[in-house]
Amino acid sequence: MLKQEILQTLHIILNQNYFKFNDSFYKPATGVGMGSPLSGLIVKVFSQYCENLILRHAFENKHIFYTCCS
Image 1 (cartoon, rainbow, N blue to C red):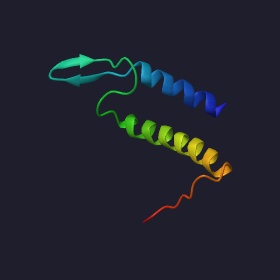
Image 2: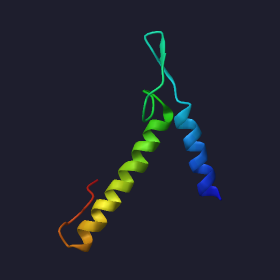
Image 3: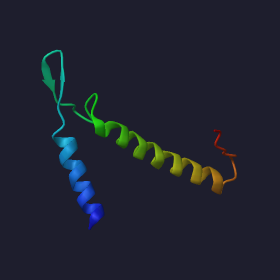
């Protein structure tokens, strides 16, 4: 139930996404408008998804050593 509500909310936000630049309003054809507070979150979620997908495949095939440096 919560997952569906989150997806519906994201759908509404992304479809009603406008931004102003040089005194004109724009609606992006895809993605999130420039400066949207939501853009950072979407990038993190997408990056995490891609990283998990790529790393999982690499670990299963033992083709990678992955470490995190601080």
